[in-house]
Length: 462
Image (cartoon, rainbow, N blue to C red; front, side, top):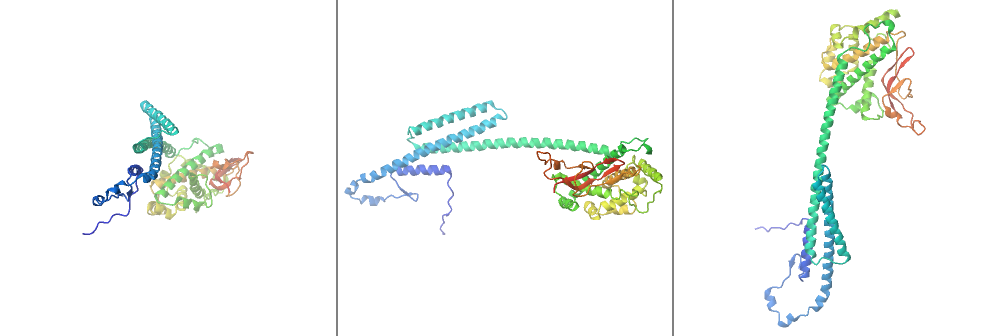
C-alpha cells in the first residue's frame, strides 16, 4: 500500500484559535511539561523501573530556582493580555451598541434606543473597573478563562456590528430604490407631458398669425413667431435623428467632432447643438436666394409682383400639413424644395444605416414622397423653413439672413449664446478671465429693416 503523505500547507489559525493555543501552552508550562513539536517526551515505564532509589533523591531546588521567576513572568504577561482582551471586548461591545443605537433612530425604536444606551453605560463602567484593577495591580488570578471569554465576547460584538451594518445598508438600498422608482415615474410623467406638448405643437400647422393679415400690414412681429416655430421644428428633427443614430450604433462623438472639430463643450448635453447647427446650415443654405437655388425656377422681374407671389405661397401653405400638401401637389415648388433638401441633408450611407435600404431616397427621386414617420418629421421641418423664406421675401426690403463666423468676438447685439457657462468666469472687476468667442452658429439671425433678430451661437473659450 502506498503511504499517505501529510500536506505541507498548514491553514492559518484564527484569532480565537491562537488564544486557545496560548492558554494551553501556558498551562503545560506551569505543570512542568515542555512540549516538543506538539508531543510530550515521557520516558518508557521500563526505563523508569531501572532507576535506582538514590536517583529519586535528585535535588530540584536548583532547577526550580531558575524556572519559578520565568513562570511568574509568563503568568503576569498572560494576565495583562487578558486585561487588554477585556478592554477590546468592551470597546467592541460599545461599538456594536452604538451601531444598534443609530439603527434604532430611523425608524424610531424607543426600546432599542434604551437597550443600546444601557449597554453603552454598562460597558463604560466595566472599562472604568478594568482601569482601577490595572492601577491597583489587581490582575485576574485565572487569566486563561478570562482571555478566552474576552475573545469570544469580542467576536460576538464584531459579528453583531456586521449584522447591524448589513441591516442598515439594506435599509439604505431600499430607500435608494424607492427614490429611483419615484424619479423614474416623474421622468415618465415629464416625457408624457413633453410628448403631449410636441403633439399639440406639431399636429397643428397654425401659426400665431391672423388669417386676415395683408401684405401691407406685414412686420417683424409676424416674422418672429414663424422663426420660433421653425427652430422648434428643427430641434424636434434633431432629437429624432440622434435617436436614429443611436439605434444604428453610430459613434456620436466622432460624428460631432467631424461637424465642428476642435470645439470644447461646457457640458456633455451641449453636443446636440453641433448636430442642430449642421441641420440648420443645410436647411438654410441658399436662403438669401429668391428661388432657394432650385433649378428651373423662374420668378417675376417686378419687385412688387414677386413680393406678392411669396406672400401668397406663405398664405397657401401655412394652414396645411406638409405631407397632405405634398400628396396633393407633388410637383409644386415646395415639393422640389423638399426633394433637394432631403437628398442633400440625408446622405445615402446615413439612410442605409438608419433603415437598411434606400427606399425613401429612391421614392423621392422618382417624384413621389414616402409616408414614413421620419420623412413626415423632415417635411414638417422643411415646411417651416419654406414658410420663413416666403415671409422673408415678402418684406420690402427683403429680410437679410446672417450668421457669426467661427472665432469671432461675441456681440450681445447680434448674437444670443446657448451656453450661459461661458459668462460665469468673471473676475471681481466684472471682466472675463478669457474673452469668449463663437465656436459655431446654431441658428442664423435676420435683419428686417432696422430690426435685428439675434443669431443663436455656441460660445467657448480659446
